[in-house]
Amino acid sequence: MRLQEKVAIVTGAGSGFGEGIAKTFAREGAAVIVNDLNREAGERVAADIAKAGGRAAFVCGDVSREDDHVTLLGEAVTRFGHLDIVVNNAGTTHRNKPLLEVTEAEFDRVYAVNVKSIFWSARAVMPYFLQRGAGVMINIASTAGVRPRPGLVWYNGSKGAVITASKAMAAEFGPKNIRVNCVNPVIGDTGLTAEFMGVPNTPENRAKFLAGIPLGRFSTPQDIANACLYLASDDAAFITGVCLEVDGGRCI
Image (cartoon, rainbow, N blue to C red; front, side, top):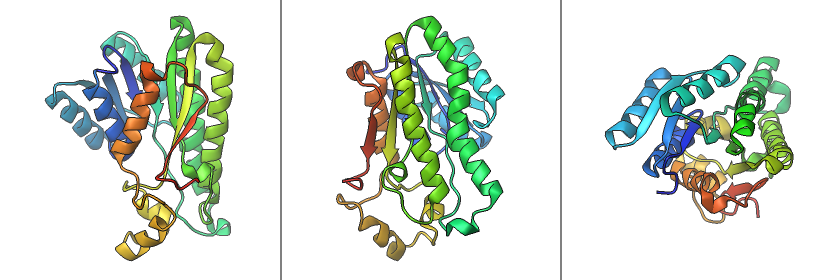
């Protein structure tokens, strides 16, 4: 098992990419703090992990709030003894639409969840990692931060900020044996798919997006989980500051 005796926090783990990451980490031996704003969804994922013989605990929380990140760290240490890995997966978007139609409230929410959450996460866990002398942070960004699409201007910008901040954190904390990496998924089948597309999630509309992905399909939670597993494991001990595109060739 590649994460035996490790402890991880996965935010936004009640569905989609986060659920895939949490379950994969648990199968590979990690104890997982399953975080989500949706209590029912998060409790289901934690229960699924337990039924499969893994270790998990659900902790409800809003990643845009500082106190909730402090709580996540405390719960990880209290329940499982320590913390090794944080995956900042929780994210949101405004609907795909012209820039001038995006409201200030939509803008603020996107940046609070996608960017400020990582600020709060770093403020909470980096002192702990520094004290332990090691740690891993993985931030889920997006191909949108590398090859932006029209209609998602502020979402694109938020993910570009995640990419740049992750690289800067890797440079700053590398000498302290703390690794920081990104995973950049292409569009996948999640609760936000229709929002990203800006149109109903129909076969005809999907075909337009698939045309830009050389491997010809959307990403899956397992695709993203496999990338995170590698970056979280000792196999990636010399990997930091990397933004791994899991995109079927979208960013070529």
